[in-house]
Image (cartoon, rainbow, N blue to C red; front, side, top):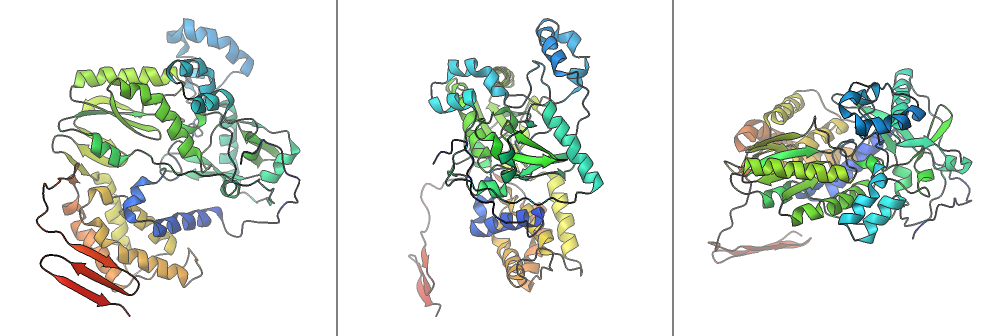
Length: 486
C-alpha cells in the first residue's frame, strides 16, 4: 500500500511512553538477539546509533547567510585553492562543491542517468524516497517532556547544524503534530549522535527483507596477498532525498517549532535497505570494470594484488562516487595499500589469511568480564551490553558459539522473572560463570580464524542428527542411538 501523503482524520491515539526510550531500545535489540541464531548477529543492519548517520552535529559552524552561499558557489569552481581558507570550508557539513549534504543526490541526477537504466533508483533520486506503508499511519499523542538544560543545549546545537546542512526544515502543516517523534542526542566515544525515535512511525511501514554485504562477503572475495584500502562515506544516509509526501511523517518538535526531515534519517527502519540498494546501483558499473570491492553502508573495502593498481582503482572509485553526489570522508578513509586492514571491527591479514579481533576490542571485553566476575551483581541492561560485545567477536574467535548459550539463558531468565525490568539484577548460574571464565582464559588464545574455510574433498565420516520436543537421534557408520525426552 502506497500512502500519498494525505493525513488521516482519525482521532489521535492516547498513547504515551510508558518507559524511557533507551530501555525500550535495549529491550527490542535483545529480544531480536534471542530470536535469531547467533551466527546472524554480525549481520545486523548497522552499528548502534551511527552507521550511515549524520556526523557533523558536534562541529562548530561559521556560515554566511544562504544568499552569500549562492554567490560563493561560482568561486568554488574558479578558485578552489583560495576558498579553502574561507569560513564555509571550516564547516564539516559543507562539501567543496558547495552543495549541502541533505538530499544532495538529486543535484547529480544527470550523472546517474548516464550509468543506470533501472527506473527505481532514478525515480528515487529525482523525486525523493517515498515511504511505502503496510497500513495507513494513525496520529498518536506525544506528551511534552521536561528536558534537562544540558540536553536541551545539545539538541539546539544539533537542530542548528541539521538546518545548515539542509537535512531538516521547518514544517508549517499543523497536521504534522499528530506524528511527532522524539529527537535527542546520544553521547558516543568522541561526539554526540542526533537520533530521531521512529518507533511509532516504523510500525506502519512496509518492511522488506534484504541481505547486506559485510564480513562474510569480504571473506569470500579476498585472495592471498591482496592489498586493501578502505573508503568511508560521510553523512551517508542524509545524501538520499525524502519525497515531500513523506517528510511530514518524519517530524519532531524543538522549543515549540516543528521540523521535518528532507533527507533519509537514522532511526527509520527502512533506511539501511534504501541506502544499501542505492549504493549497490552506484558501484555496479565499477564491478563490471573488474574492481573487487565490498561495501557495508558507509564502509567500502577495495582489493587488488598490486598496490599501484589498487591506488588507481581507489581513485577511480572516489571520482565515480563523488560524481554521483556521495561525500568521501578522507580523514577517516585509509588509502595506503596494506596487507593488514581493519574492516567492520575485524583485522584482516592477507599474508597469513586470517581474521582476528583487534587488541583494543579484546582489552575492552576483558575489562567487562573482570567486572562481572566480582561479587557486585550487574543489571540486565549491563549484561546485554556484555553479550553484544561477545557475539560481535564470533566470526574471529574459535569455539565462540559454544560458550555463550548459558549466559544468554541466564539473562533471559532474569528478565522473565522480573517483568522485563532492565534495571533489575541479572543472576548468573554456575554454567554461565564457567562460560565467562572460558572467555577470560581463552579469548586471546582463540583469537584468529582462517579467512576462508578449508573445504575437505571428502569427509572422513558423516554424522546425521535430528531432534524434536519429544526425542533425539544420532546415526553414523560407527554409532546409532536415540533417546526420548519425555
